Image (cartoon, rainbow, N blue to C red; front, side, top):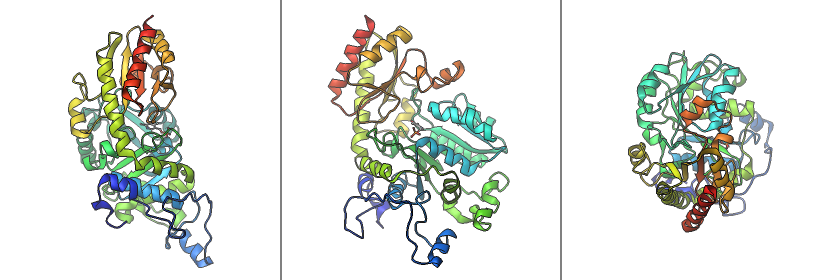
Amino acid sequence: MTSEHTLGFDTRAIHAGFSHDPHTGASILPIYQTNAYVFDSCDTAAGRFKLTEPGPIYSRLNNPTVDAVEEKIASLEGGVGALMTSSGAAAIVLTLLTIGQQGDNIVASGSLYGGSHAMLANSLPRYGIETRFVDDPADPAQWQQLADERTVAFFGETIPNPKNDIFDIESIATVAHNIGVPLIVDNTVATPYLTRPIEWGADIVVHSVTKYLAGHGNSMVGAVVDAGTFDWSADPDRFRQFAQPDPSYHGLVYSQLGKEAFIVKARVQILRDFGFCAAPVNAFLSTIGIETLSLRMQRHSDSARAVAEFLENHDLVDSVSYPTLKSSPYKTLQEKYCPKGASGIVTFDIKGGRDVGERFVEALTIFQNVANLGDVRSLVSHPASTTHSQSNEAELHAAGVGPGTIRLSIGLEDVSDIIDDLSQALQAAAQ
Ligand SMILES: *Cc1c(COP(=O)(O)O)cnc(C)c1O
């Protein structure tokens, strides 16, 4: 679709990346459930391997179903290209391995998804990539202080949960760019419907498509979007992986590829070698989900706001974190970055701590107690015993998780039924 970027967001959510199948006329994206692609000749095969001829080689690198969804996600986030992965975790590790190597470091917000925190704090250091966590992510000076000549990226999440402390993308992007490093933003919870980090200065956006983009709790997928804004050639000592020739492509120097340097390297080198590619059927389920993204995100956000207001006025509730509440310290940031709403995650602390919290979770009937978020179904979880169970006291505090903290992912059911369920479960927990 040539006029894609002049079309509105909702039109692109439906039409970007695919109009119809040229071979059969099928109007819905076919699932190309194939590993390989017949080469017309040995010359064609050789050209594809050398990257001199476009076209698919092997589904670890490219697949027509996945390609179409990548183009749609790139269009919605406003990037020059995107790449889908087998999960959100894979999207993050692929991004970091594309940029950093042994001896490098990342400066990251301390308020992150538990799995990302564990990857950065424990797993990547075993391969020589260290992370320095910022205590107060809203303070640009702390980011500046933690960075040095081996820092290769800043990393934060638009709407981290359970704290719902909206990330000040514009301020932190400015610090990153002054130092000469890219800002990577995990936009899973906000989605490009609520905010587009690239418009605020982010250089790379990552997603757990598993959550709101796919939206129906039925497929594990990730995505990486390249804004095309970062100049990887400006500092060859810092970005050695971009400056040094890649022997596996006859000495290709990625920084010479211009604005697509990052996303090309991510695919042809890291995805090729490490292999965390998206399954075509999961890419298909993602695109069906994305077609209704705007409608779903507005409803998730509106219902979550109503739930947050209900909880805030309830006797058994100690405190509620939701960015649109007057009591939220992040309301100003919400109004700036997510004026249409603040997504579907509501966190609260129940009076009485862990036991009462567990009774509450077990008394719910509509909410499912699962380790997931961003489903059409309403979900509940107890972070201290699940997503954040590997964190120590200080890390729990930084992430805003207490023993009685409950995380809700508000679904698309009737909001009156959602609130009735919460109300009866609070009563049951109190007894
Ligand atoms: C779930 C999640 C991830 C990890 O994604 P998976 O698809 O589960 O691998 C990363 N970031 C955030 C914000 C998440 O919620």
